[in-house]
Image 1 (cartoon, one colour):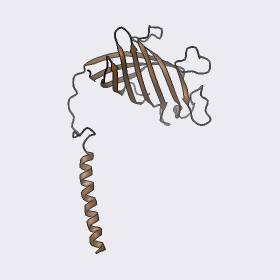
Image 2 (tube, helix red, strand yellow):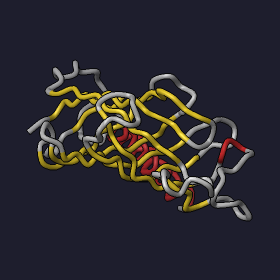
Image 3 (cartoon, rainbow, N blue to C red):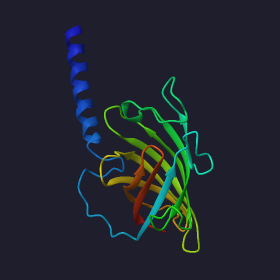
Amino acid sequence: MAVKNHNSAVHLGFVWLVVSSTVLFQSSDGHRWKKYPLPKPCRNLVFYFHDVIYNGLNAENATSTLVGAPHGANLTLLAGKDNHFGDMAVFDDPITLDNNFHSPPVGRAQGFYFYDMKNTFSAWLGFTFVLNSTDHRGTITFGGADPILTKHRDISVVGGTGDFLMSRGIATVSTDAYEGDVYFRLCVNITLYECY
């Protein structure tokens, strides 16, 4: 009797595994894994954002600061070992239309990043472009992994407000310039596929 119940339980478990794996082979929106052609982009924008990290000497010009660091680390300097692993910074950076730091800003990049790998430079970004110019009003929100040593990285555009209400797409990010651990400039090429 116990053997018969055991076989029924194994059979039921196997059926459950087959059914659940069939469900898992579908994506989260219910479509099967199948490559569909991307829709045509509805908007393309290019901005630069300039990050000047506080190092204890540049409070007047700093646009970001460390708010978290590995145990025992200094919050005015990035961790020197393990590719800054564990450091977390918040920022309020100017956004410009060209790569000149002194160009008039068209908005602010506000958010955070943290270094999330020990064996290579990599960060995770979560930020919003707050745009308030004559050309663009509203926000664009981004989130995703940033493998810093890769020339071009894609980060998800997860939403927006104002002129960019509920926008979705991809932001291709590239490091345009950097000066040690104090300054970097990112070129952000935004391609939106959903515009309202």
